[in-house]
Image (spheres, helix red, strand yellow):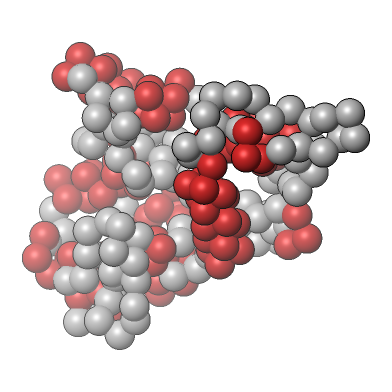
Length: 233
């Protein structure tokens, strides 16, 4: 998933979810536009309504250019991994999970000088920042500033600030795990492509998808492991 404006995304998702729930029992009959051009939402199935709101209505410009050089429509299309995880409701079979892990491990690219820690203060700014990949009237300009990691959306990071709870708490991570070569490798690979450990995880493939570069990953790793970081206080 790309970093988005959290408040606006959540509000939009809530609205779509509510409409899907309201129409989930409407039956399979299609609610295509009538002669006047009006669409009857009550005759749409949940799947039809979701597809209509995303791909056919004018509520969102799907031809908008994205920072990665595609369009909003292309960004919303799932790749093979996402389709498989959706089809299995994030519960792939053992055979599928093994294939996901193997492909994720094959995708890894490591820094030439080995996995090193960067600047923990820069890493803190990246972990608590939400800049990057927003479209519409607040499109982010990546030529002026690189994308943040937005780690706070899913993880608790330090006792001084409130983070998310979708992922495990990382508070005190360096204090409990230490700063070994194995720990660094695990964190790097989790940020780069976490499916190497947890097939169909909710965690984004931040390195593999090009959201974070090697330096940004090194800085976030330092924020998690450095003894002076607020994470470990």
